[in-house]
Amino acid sequence: MTSRTPDPATMPVAELLRFDISWYLRPVAELAAMPRVGWLRILYTAWRFRGFRAILYYRWANVAARGGHRFISGFLARRMIKSTGAEICPTAHIGPGLRLPHSQGVIVSHDARLGAFVTLGQHSTIGGNFGRMGDDGRYFPTLGDGVVLTAGAVVAGPVHVGNGVIAGANTVIVKDVPEGAVVGGVPGEVIRISEEPTPGLAAARAMRGSDPGAAHVR
Ligand SMILES: CC(C)(COP(=O)(O)OP(=O)(O)OC[C@H]1O[C@@H](n2cnc3c(N)ncnc32)[C@H](O)[C@@H]1OP(=O)(O)O)[C@@H](O)C(=O)NCCC(=O)NCCS
Image (cartoon, rainbow, N blue to C red):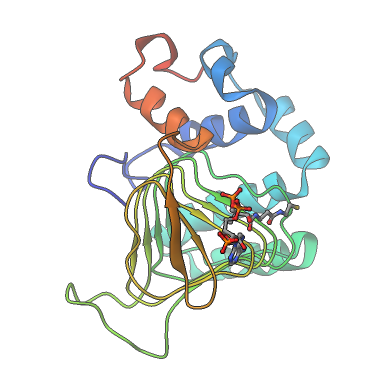
């Protein structure tokens, strides 16, 4: 996660869910018009989108894990796997606005760091690489804002994936990727650098106030 990304550990879970849910229900351009998110809306979205249900489980499991309630976080994590097919470790650090269009087979390991408005396609995996350690002493990947992992993409080991990167289907990323890159292949190589930000990166910028009209998701 980049240093500019709001730290999910310090954001109230209701605020994180508000960003998550906004992205499910509204096009990015209309984020600013999103009304306050009540519990009925959260429950409706969870019923309608399996991917959002996974996020709901993860956010609460994360709160429980941070509070030291390992039994509760473990219970919620197991429910998530059973009900949605996704396996997001409660101790992963994930910024606001996570999106799982299809939750089946999504794996996020325990110390992975994801920025804001990241999209994870089905069977995408973010995890370690057999104990390989980075210069910063980390074992797990760091993804910037607005990153998109498409179907089956894998990010393994202590790599940094820049803001707005798109990983193509079945790509395996094992080394750092610069901002805005479209990556494909095994191992992943840069296909091109995109001038256009991904919708997630645009939303992350709007959230931080570089676009004052869309600074707050309410
Ligand atoms: C990676 C991706 C986003 C690139 O799209 P693009 O920028 O339009 O790229 P192009 O289709 O023009 O292909 C450019 C080059 O990259 C290669 N390429 C494209 N996707 C690739 C992939 N996943 N792995 C390896 N190489 C890939 C192409 O073969 C082409 O190579 P060439 O220049 O040697 O001919 C797209 O191919 C992709 O993988 N999309 C996944 C979509 C998905 O998961 N959908 C599921 C929805 S449920």
